[in-house]
Length: 485
Image (cartoon, rainbow, N blue to C red; front, side):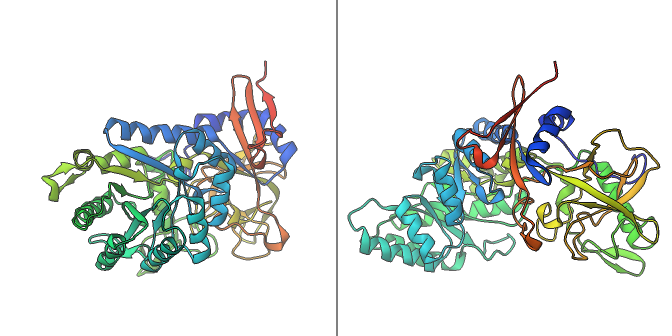
């Protein structure tokens, strides 16, 4: 049962909490780099890799893991992925260039997503694996390889398949109904393309959707073998879950209180008529909110374990992991948010507070909403206050955080955050778990405000080492902040 005002406590890894509690380290880093700033924790990324590997090793499946670079542009995280021995999934020439700078060999790089001719030619020249999104792209690869490299090594590709039975519709991939046309191209005489296997991309957190997609891909492998092809890979993409909340019961209690407030039966917890995707009808709130994923309590590792243990009805109800092993197949996966889960936070500075006509406190920060919030999502975990000097003093305050742009919609939080007192100018506001898409997906340089820079934090036996993200490849800009003796 929740105690006190409605709250959304955030889960915080021990390493991140230790750095935020280290006054010398945090103050030193901010004195050098200022606010707003994104803090990146590569060691947390490493822990996430190990957690997924432990599941895959326990289930004895052959696998290859690729870090989905689009989740975060950080050079440090790309370098961490390479050092961890996994591959990288890139979706643009810029990401491919970043992967190359981080030291990834071509055989460790997979290019995914829709690709135009220019990017396709770059991928072919680089020698990476290509995850083919559509028939136009496959025909382009076929024409180029026949004309320009008839005697060279075949190009390794996966076919991304879309419109799979029993799964949400997706614009990505070759529709299942058209897949035979792709197989005909691959099996035709003189083809310089080697089919590795089949892939899918699902905008869904449901394990059942992935089970049905994997079962369809198993059938496609049999169909491809009948054409004389020899695929051995099923690529399940990404979409593994994150855990944001430290208290699922309090999350649920906050959502109930929010809905009561929207219906006019409790304290208003929403900013200026914001409904979070709900609609109000007959004095009640209805619909699906934009923030549903923030209440998840299933880790990425647990979700992956559930998927591998799922029984396949068309394969004598054997678990997916067993079916893969029995058929000498390899599982590929491209986690992005699951690998950067909790590997970054965003720190802003309080510029001033003001009181609205109804007494609502508004706390203005030195960053804008797009620097910390992906697209139209509301980040339903409460930011942390790190006072510059003395702790906050009462009375308690239910505040909204506002951004620095001259737009009415530039509210960093549209939900009310209850604090033990009002933050003061110069105090720090920390937004937890922002590494997955929050930092980069919507960030813009509006009003000539540059997006926050990224700073890398590494814990050592002596204390913390802090580096600029663009300095990690050279190691020239690191600063040490030893523990207090």
